[in-house]
Length: 402
Image 1 (cartoon, rainbow, N blue to C red):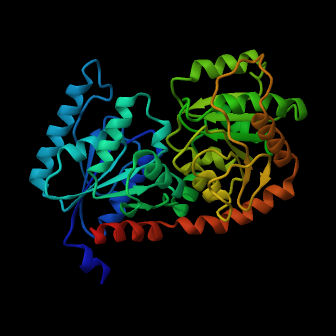
Image 2: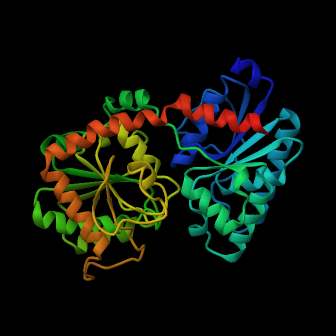
Image 3: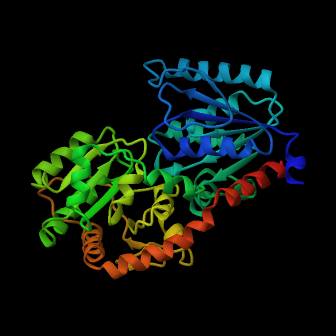
């Protein structure tokens, strides 16, 4: 019945690229899931590096990843190409992920319904007043907005003056079976394999772009205290980005070269997560923190900053999302610590209270195997709340209402 009801629709999904981030991964997976119920066309602005494949029909616009000096020309080319595809495909609905696809989606609007997926706390990720105005204008042109969390919805309503009636929070799906299968893949170099074998039960891991939002320097600073307590503790950082030099210098200045390691971007991070004891999440702000859901599939306990927004919704769903924890909170599905302030510090600056809390929580988790096992059991059940079928059904409900 559902298939007959939806099949008449022609859904176009626009993503920035096919590698690197959680939004791109969700876009490609959603295209595959929705293609079971409708004709789907997946459009990627720049598909040169393809990490996330999709079963849906895909068109690559071949735009350069670097916009260059003439950003307006880049956006104009994106608009023109998307407009042409819409003219040929005649979509009934067009869903976009990330700021650049959102703008192209709105500018090229025809008779189709526009759905924008907001993946982050946009009020914290707009560097200028122009960007704020642009986002507000783009959001105002959408027929529906899917926010990544309840608190992202609140941010859109309060900061961008968007009617809450058009916003539907939908979490990211967790492809547990796929992730568990990928956990078993042999992706390690000989050095990495020896490292994980030698340091069992002592490895903390984090993953994400090496940028201001992810706040990895807070974790590195906290880890100095962890090493003072547990001398053989190790921290593995998965990711790449513009803050890499700063992080490496901080590791050196704190004399942590034998304890903290930056492994770079990994197309399949799950075997690394699967062999760690604790996942640490020092983000300054998020839309949800999709990696926390993926940790559930890997049965990896989490220590997370209670940043705006997402971690509390995932790890402590019965608590008040409007407030932040003031100390270590051993919550239902993970450990929350106070938010990081996002300010860069040197090795000489004393630890901030939130960093102290993160260090103490990590120490407790590494030393307390029973606590880790307890969290493993709890998060296994929590992960079922994010099954692809449940999440796809929520997307279909948004489409059907338009």
